[in-house]
Length: 314
Image 1 (spheres, helix red, strand yellow):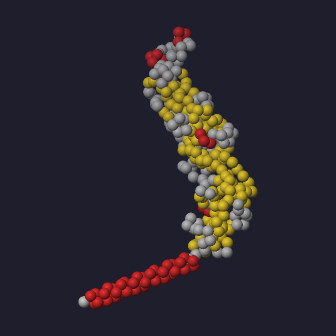
Image 2 (cartoon, one colour):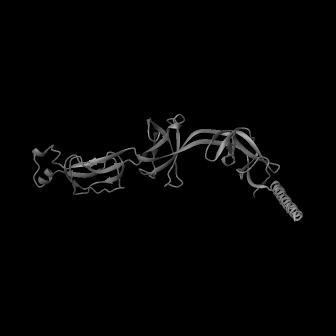
Image 3 (cartoon, rainbow, N blue to C red):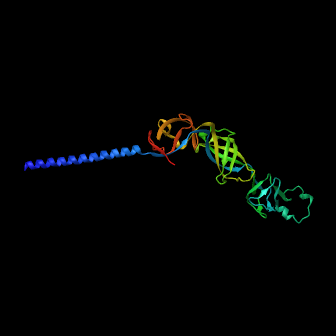
């Protein structure tokens, strides 16, 4: 009985060893197969050829338009408004009569014969309200027949031939932006329209909460396309370079050692470090490390390792 037990244990050990040996061999075979598949796999990529060009570093801020000139027309005396026929959006010329205001005394004496006692009395004779400059009626508060108090606003006129453009510049860019800097201005609501102006003033006080300084420009409006309070996108060029080596931003990668790209050469991805210059949203300047005519990988580069096989996608 003891001998049979020894034989049974020995057979179980041998069978277990055989099973382990077979399993290990399968695993090794699978690893070899995977390794072979990886070595033959080609990462699909897209490429571009490096060339020289011009580049501009810029920032984008946002702002709005306000009237450069605006006035509120009001009554010199208390009285009744006569002949006020203008409404919002109507145009007026400099010196044009906007309305008449007649005092209560003038209404009471309207049927009486003129006499010397009334001469020079501005409250007796109806007076005219005139436009101090050409522009557009932006707000109207009263109508013909309304009775107003002295100094009460009747309507507002703004000069729409030129506007102030206001923007808020992050304080970190104050050393790079100067008065006289050229601006490229677009308006989301005016598709396809681009305007140019320059910075007239930079506020000397930085907003404590936003850490921005207000800038101001004057934007002429000869075609009357612009309107007060219109939202603006303002591009400010900080630096411009011409005839420098340019690399698309999609090709640029970064790690603790600096910036690098992958070149495509002989069907492989070759990693190359380089020195980055100024950059914008689309491209960057190459100061050193790459050359004109280098073929770089611009898509499919994030998972690449140095020496991997690559294939250009059609």
